[in-house]
Image (tube, rainbow, N blue to C red; front, side, top):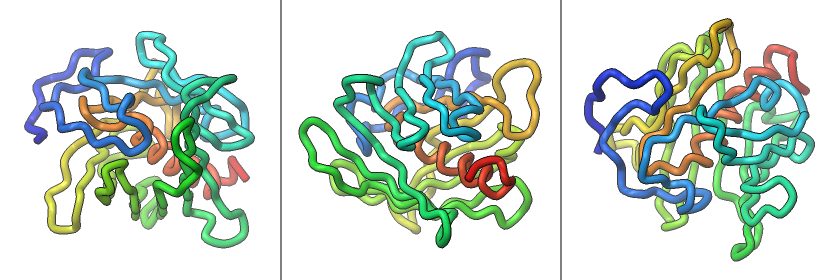
Length: 211
């Protein structure tokens, strides 16, 4: 599993031992190499469509802002993860439904985000992998300052394993600014992105930025 990492290169994901693939959205997103993906502000502060690319400019996903859906392609998607949130009750919970060319639409995630302390989220998640395993995500660090760690465990008794790091992007860093997710090899990048989007969209709702 993961061990203490050496100092990371400026534009690369931090080097932790690769994990066995844990497909949640799609096995294609469990890469064998570290991946660093940029999350733009308009994704979690507006209803505008946008592309999600690596720090090297490689397109990975398309975000449909009106449908709140993460897709593998803007016009001809084969995998769609749709996020649903009630606006009058349980506003801090997202449900994620997956549909693909091979699978009918079904729920794969329930992500509950609370902010018991200002800008410090806690996550209660129920996530089911393609293999039927149930996994939970955990967050620690200064989320609003883009200095946090995302970890994952298969049971309450299992020690969480680091799966991603959140870091600021660009020179003008400010609270809830654009950021980068560094994802450990073997971890489903799409699942990590969906959890991070849920956290930031709830933060935007609580701050009155998004409705």
